[in-house]
Structures are given as C-alpha cells and as structure tokens.
Image (cartoon, rainbow, N blue to C red; front, top):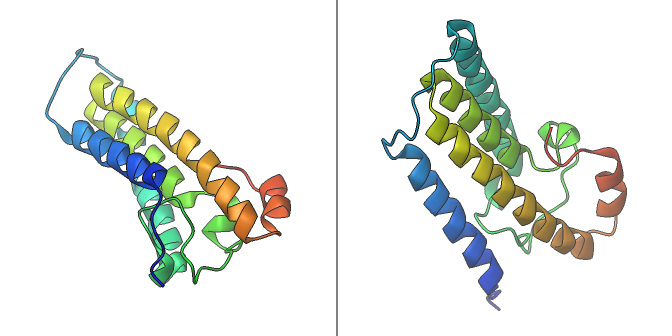
Length: 149
C-alpha cells in the first residue's frame, strides 16, 4: 500500500524550494559592509555547517525524505549529529545559509535565511508531532536534545 503524502507536507516543501530559489537569486536590497574578519568567519561557519549536515545525511542514509512526515520504514536516530540537534539537516542549512550570507556581506541573503529559519521552526513543530505519534520514545529525546543548535 502506497502512503499518501499529506497536503501540508507538499506545502512545506514548496515554500522550502521557493525560499532556496530566492536565496540564490542575484539580488541586492541593501549594500552592507561587514568587517573582513566577520566575512571570513561566515565562510568557516558555512564549511562547519555543511560538514555537520553531511554527517546527518549519512546517518539517515536511505531514510531521507524531503517531506516532514516520517518514512514508513524509518527508525528514530538519537546518536551522532542527532544527539546534538533534533533537526541537524535544518540546522546545517540555516547556519550554512547564514555563513554564506555573511561571507557575501549580503543583507538580502541574511533576510532570506531568517525566513528559512521561521519555515524550519514551524516545519519542525509539525514533524515532531508526527514523530511523537510514531515513536513513543521521541518525547524523552525531545526533552534532552535541542531543536536546532
């Protein structure tokens, strides 16, 4: 039996894709000059975040889905990157987006990253309700592990 994907899942993914497209548009809302050390700190943040995200992706392996609903054959992962953050991939995307925005001294990219943070916050609330239904032990995990970092 094929599991039907809820409309809310498609909505979250659609907004996610649109924000990512907006992030990479070559727009400039406001020229800002950040100190050189802050720009390069953004580059370091981006590299560390991408590394963290890759570790989380490798842990999910074949259980990765763009939708917030847990995959049918999924298991609850609480080790590795998931020990640090309940949503390490979202965390990696937020911090790598912020890091690159700082590196580029782009107010526009910082603004879009803020909207991505808001989206991931609400998406994670929805996802966690579904995870708590599927995995009774999720409530304990949620108490001891942060949502992002």
